[in-house]
Length: 281
Image 1 (cartoon, rainbow, N blue to C red):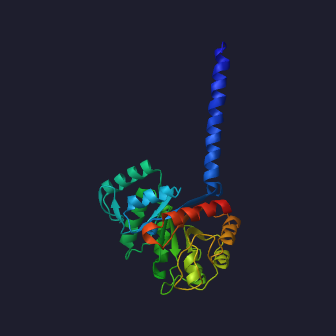
Image 2 (cartoon, one colour):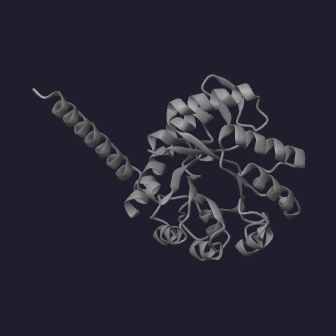
Image 3 (spheres, rainbow, N blue to C red):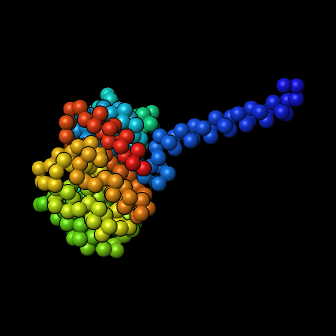
């Protein structure tokens, strides 16, 4: 072009168009992001592998968030486990490798420290690692102390609902226990465990409206304590209705895929479940 101004304008428009297409492609690839949902995986799904092997599998499932669990070997040439007592140097090494992987550490748990000092150390770890939500099953007597730490650090603690003998299997008891102690204290809704406990996950979600801070996402083959995971949408957890309820509640937070079956080769199962989830949106 003879006119340099016209040429520069043409380049700018072309560049803007390319960026717009890229943003549009990302929105189509991750439709849950438009709703404020962080779809990822609980690293426990891949507990037969080390943490960074799990990260590679999470990435292969087209997920960008991870909820780490304590006790998993770190791997990737790093010694130790994903324990909140790890030294600061190890934390920085893990964060640097996560940045390279494109997977963000969002949650941590299920973990339950045994003292106030241990809880403070856990919150310091979460702050240093950029963790937004800790999943836990603490004694009710500790909840006031935990709520104070939540308010101080602005980090969520979400009560997880393992089946009995966990005291939080009953959604009514869990909600009564957290009361109005802190807006950062709420529930980690494990819809599969609700099914195992004989509860309707959609009804439980409705009861917990406004207090669901985190999700453990499962679909099960049957309504029983011995049920196992199946591809989302093919089981009894009523996944479409759960998604509808999450939309109606304007849920914001992480949805952790937790596929506790076919342990040594379940990445294809998670990928198929993620594909169904996104198509259902």
